[in-house]
Image (cartoon, rainbow, N blue to C red):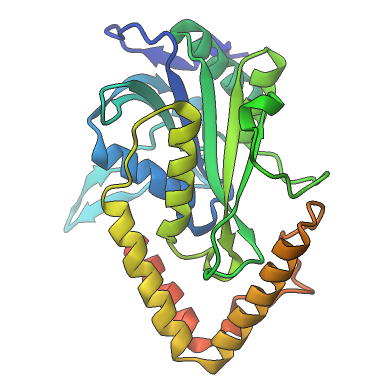
Length: 302
């Protein structure tokens, strides 16, 4: 059996990180609107970073379920995009260090991987671990996006409303990491941006903005949105254009607005806004115009 400490290698030149935060997002689990992936892209493009720890992907991934890309040119293999599961060291706008763990969600050895991350949390003196992604909700894009917060201690997420009393979801490494860290008395939280269910297959920058703001506030980091604000504005304009060109789409969005406004007015905290295919319109019902938009957005993100 491979011991957790053998799953990773740490750079020999790592500064004192006592009191820093560790952000994490894994590819492979639910990420509606590419909310979490867009946050990662924003952080890596906005701040200089370097890898300080690298996990053994050969021991953690099923390559045949998620085949890495290889490039063939004329008569030879020219490139292989090897998957990476790494921890990077970044500094925010005012120079405060923070860590970012990203890469494909492990297929194997979940408990060993989580224990390995816990070892790094102890080794570096991490004070808070934060996961983030997007989830589909039956809400319209014309209303403020909501956020579900959860954590190892209630006071870590004070001020965030709870929409669910109890719900079971497929297991995922991010959730297991938060759960195990809580068991070992480490502070850990997670944020899930509420993405309109008809936009889950597109890249929806507004959801990333919601996550980035929540992360910055929870961690005390200076993480201005930068170009993400303009990207989100352009995406919203395109959505409005598509809605305006289709009476069918407009009617369905209006129905979702009424549902949202009724819920908000009643302040029924036990309402479940997760998608129910029998009660809410599907993406197909939004018509050809919106489907074309989703395809265009998906193409831009590839």
